Length: 142
Image (cartoon, helix red, strand yellow):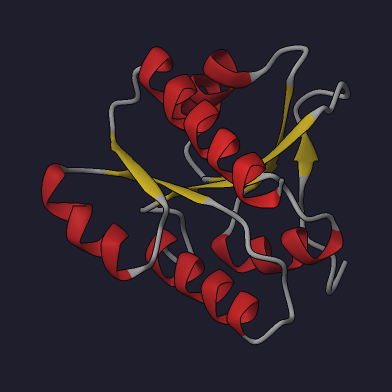
């Protein structure tokens, strides 16, 4: 379908909505293992180009971007979300970027990601980073 993002809910119990953008199955599995539960729902998009539409349709509480997602990398996707937010077309959403190596922190900073982790993903570290970003967002909103 043209114009419709290909977002797939990985759970139906959504309290906190996290949008994950990756085309790597192992990243999906790691994020799902670390986050899915009674308090967090994860939606999945497989292409960076679909992130803006998915955010526009239902603004998530957090976006997790894989740096190496196909057709529009994580850096370009993060910059796109920030530009759309600054232009008032999308709400500001915290971004956690998943990097391939320590040297990629430069890219995460340039893209205005709020936080980043270097793969491979440690479930406990990922959960702490997500909880911290969500707490910061709640503090700013309240």
